[in-house]
Image 1: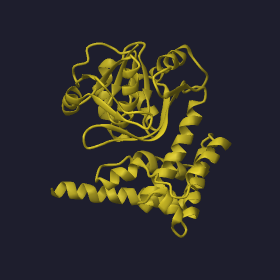
Image 2: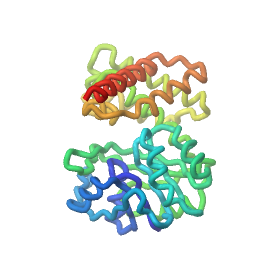
Image 3: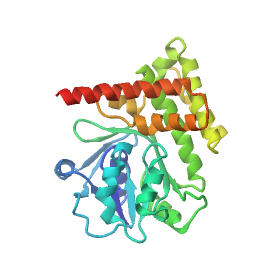
Image 4: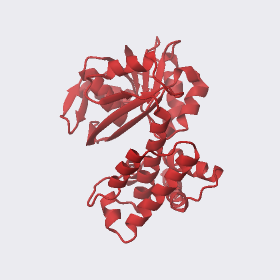
Length: 311
């Protein structure tokens, strides 16, 4: 199976690196600067499961000459339109596209561009980033890659992907309820990104602050209500997991969106918090804390844009 990984950042770099280590045929679609860096130092991954470095084959935009069997899309949501232009030449009649972007709206955008028959649902549960030296750093041990047919049920192609991912060193799992899985991840993103960006703090610090516990449960309840009204009521195991997440004393957990703010980068605020708020409004569901979090991140983006314009 020929695999094209779009982007060699935190998600694409980690899962693609694991697949290379397991002997799979992987190529990264990257920009020239990242291609040069990977050629010089290899793809370096620092992980609680063990650090490793692998050689990384790359292809630049405009240099794709034939279709791939699998396209794993691991870019930020705000980069998707550009990314689709870049990997369009890699989509053939039987190509499968597995997006592991945050949020939900990207499924419609990919299906509109390439046809719904090419697009699987997908999600990643991993906390990772890229450091100043270009190394992929995994912060916590979780490394799940879930994928499945949007319509539900298993298929020959999801079984083939599961076999390809087997033994690669991460949890690659085919799901017959991937939309439920994705909605629960969406709820978690709304919770984690919303409260940590609003408070500009880790979960442990928020929990220790007056009113912090109540604020976290409030935004969690708002996100769960939106999912339920959309037809994807969060399951008890998910509720239990996220309840533990927001009640762990001293937890250093913070969202990647907050890390983006801390380093002055653009965020996925509109694609996650903005989308969740829009769905709440459409469903007439009150979401005051979520609304405030969305406004907070939007105000940051406005200020950032003004600073960039002046520089």
